[in-house]
Length: 346
Ligand code: NAD
Ligand code: 89V
Image 1 (tube, rainbow, N blue to C red):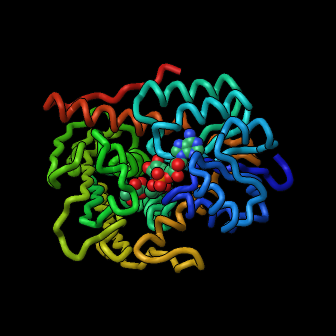
Image 2: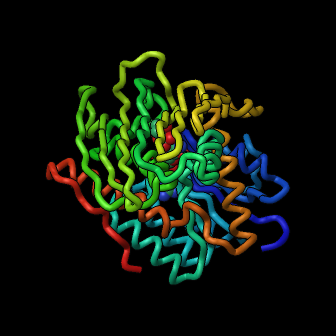
């Protein structure tokens, strides 16, 4: 794909404003020509705020009227399958927010529909693209830690996530599917694929439909063991929202990503420490700023891959491996036994 890409965005709610700001930063590469939301007020508000030519309330109408090089789907997961299949029917490449979908079958249907239509599909899984995580990836790729043996990936907060995302309180599968999915994806990236997962879930806050605390134990194919944990019900202070804290050990060294975005690396008997955060942008603000910037990094990666004809790091096909860990975690919590993740036969 050459020249500026024409994009449509579907879903103008809470998190979409970060996507809209990021597309505006990528304006040299992308023309956002249309926005769509079933809520006309939200669609029009986004159109005006980001100077987008046209607003729709019906995605099918947008696909039929607009010539799009790709679509950015920022709706909640119940609509993901229908919208991705609509994009596939129109042969429009799609990037879709996490969680991919409510079920494994939905995820597979989207991957297979886009494969059969010959269009790229990416999941907007942006924890991988956070500045601190990119730094951690560099350290691991350097080999300084040697073969990895153990890790703890921890996302614990008491921050009121329900204020901005009230639908979370109704989710029967809550903390693993909403944020555990991000941390499990990091565990795959940093320690490799997983052979089995054990899981304990807890429901701490009264009145929620789903679990708000999960502790998972993973055995990775290369031999490492990791603990992945996520909760919205932490009482710990200082609260570390929305940071993912890490401890990763290898035969030759160790690293820790501590609260305050400080990365400590120990190799050869000496330890270094540096700040791996990111400066504020005109449209970002604490404590979301690292997460917000990761939206820009994720979207830039999508555009680069579209132009190069390269599969994105978090392609639909790749995200099936992360989603399979979510499914296995819930099965493990229900059975009390470790579970091997599903494998897509495609
Ligand atoms: P939201 O409910 O605030 O916004 C979703 C919007 O989509 C709503 O305005 C709704 O009217 C619209 N919509 C729903 N179905 C539609 C359809 N078929 N056609 C057109 N519009 C439709 O939700 P949100 O909090 O912005 O979350 C959106 C997605 O982003 C979720 O999947 C959530 O998990 C994800 N999210 C990701 C991050 C992150 O990337 N780190 C952070 C927060 C939320
Ligand atoms: O980042 C996300 O996916 C949001 C969260 C509440 C975890 O920040 O849903």
